[in-house]
Length: 480
Image 1: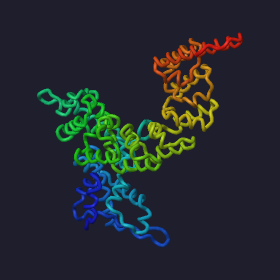
Image 2: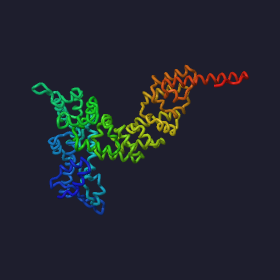
Image 3: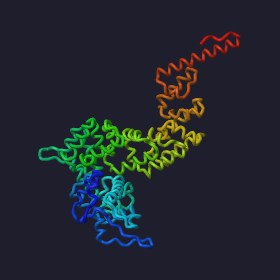
Image 4: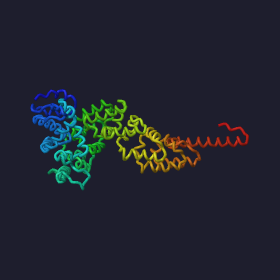
């Protein structure tokens, strides 16, 4: 059959280029034809030939996805051959995603099929990590995580054998008594054997990456970007999958795409160090997050600054995390776009476990919802602090400081200072001088400016006292 969309799609992204290159055989179709809906609303059965074509579409997407995670062609092919049930599941995902078009007989393009499946596959990888391959092969019985008492659908011996085999490669030596070249190279970069084993334990495919084909090119590319050599082990530990991604087809195009969104290309070394996983996300995943940032009112310039300063924001699911959190802060009267720009970390917190307890804490202390909203608007980091370790002990000391409660609304930054190293010593010094400074003066001034403020306050109080005494005696006040 003809493939009318391949040339257009090949320009869309590196995903598409790789995907379409796998599908140049004449019997692979680029469009899935859905049946017309009956008058009663039900759908006719899809002809077997079209179902087979749909499965080929799903296999092509899944094969490329597995290869992007570091699997070799042979391993990816073996996994596909064992995953008939999962392939059927992916076909049902296509139908579900485009149900309305399915009912009216609308044709789907290769791009639409790909975009229906890739986010789902990425979500599986995020959830199951290096055992996502086992999820695929054993579907519909997924791996059980952190529930040892529950029935385990995947034989633990199978999973253990894969990991043990990969782990053994780390310590294997050749007849000359040397480790494998890529492990020697990593040791020279400053990694320890234990670090390499830790990476392999979480991501077994890392043990099979070649030095010249995968690891060295990525490391040298990071060094060229200005990443310090001592940061390389940290980056690889955080996201070893980086070494399994093509520089020319994935990493570099992804970076150029990110730069069009406003990331400062001079800051790539810092961005990658902060969140190396950013470069492993699909273009569609990134675009979904960026669209939401525009939706809440952020400018292109500010989005670029957020991505540079806190690239982790892309990892937060829009519908499960970003949107609900934005709605919660709006309920407090907060300008969400300003808050997200000032402190994007808030949007990674749990509403139930982190945000609501902090709000309830201040409400219990007598503050109104409006006042709580003002506090978070003035000090975006307020909700990132621990109740037990920060807010409660500092509040308990605050109520002994003879300041009215509204002072915290004016200066919620109080909770950002060290209780033992800043708040208590400064307050003791102020009491020693028998004066009272505003809360922000007490804490925000430098040491020299703080002492100067105390001197001025002491002198002013002395002059006020002298003026009061002179007034009682009928004498004119002294000139200040």
